[in-house]
Length: 531
Image 1 (cartoon, rainbow, N blue to C red):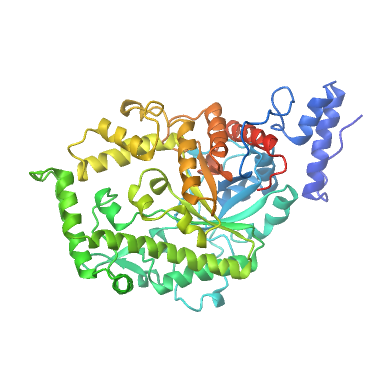
Image 2 (cartoon, rainbow, N blue to C red; image 1 turned 180 degrees about the vertical axis):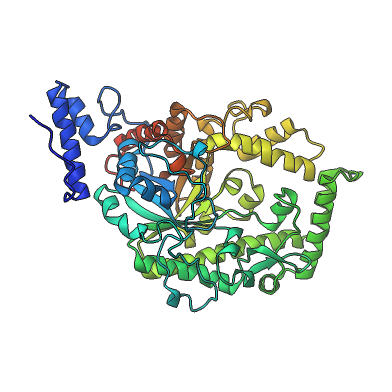
């Protein structure tokens, strides 16, 4: 018996996929394979274990079974929408895709060495001109702001494609939800019209390259964006993020030597309304910045020590903490504006915020400012980064040395690491020692601990999706068994779902299969659960 022909150009994608899988079954029968193996071929290579058996239930009841994956939109168009969705469904059990609608973090271009083989030829990204905006923009909705999104013209690749219109039907046919994903950043200044009107101003009243949370036009810009996207695309949800630190952490754990922000008229007005003296805050931050920069440059340590010198400034200028808290409240206010605009258009949309690695795993100031429960009035979920492998080198290269140079000079790096583990509730006997941070990642127990903290902080008021990171450039090598265990640990800790991260383009198929194995074990425990 011959296999059905699948090369007919008039076949629909779903019909072609059906016939291709039917051909697989026929071929399996012809070579005398067992019927159970034929069924496994029908449902995809990751439908059961090596013997075709169903996975055993886990000893806990999962809170939810959301199983998403982050991706660059160009990847799906490069590889083919049908191919990408099939690969994810068959290997990882994915039931939600999160491509960028607005990739203003400017992180779309990946080098060949960091990209994975997904069974199609890799496109060399060097020299490509890819847009940062992947949806159609309707300027009439932006009447309350002079800011305008990047204009995508014919000079951009894929300019004639409308990804979020094209993927809805094939995703839904596979039981997948579609979320837009957004990251803002200072890179917006290069492509967003009138961006310089909304930037922050530092302690010396100098403009920066970062937008101010309190600027009415910036708030209106993102609120209008939410309305625009949900009025014109049938999305299930959205994940918005901004990878920034507040002014206090920006000074004591600095990414650069820039003076602290923001002291624009809108921030001063917020401070005044909250009873925080803006000039006292400005002076306190100026002195704190001078102090920290001096210590990092090798200035003599204070007689009472570096940390005492830092604490003394907080005591002299309590406005430092008050200003930091107002910064955080302004971030939540802009999130609230977006949330309300989405809900006005589509009340059942799943709206949530990306919590990057610093606030999820090493920023105690962020944790002290606000619980996840307090974010619940304007959030349906938070997606926390819990990249077990990537965290280890980030602690070694970013976290520990910066604090040692700024305010913890008297504490050895090993003692600082131990203190970090203790303060965050991580098991120092399980996690890497100082010497191991460069060659092994954190354990799956870290994923459990961080997820359990997030679930407790949310207190049942919003959902927690845990970002399971693998194949992240700069991290130690991943292995499938650890990825599988980390995925299970997230659900065991109470997560309502997971998001495979950082980017699909970087993810090896064997590691996607590890996610799929873990997810099937979760599904076996809660077969009636829905994402």
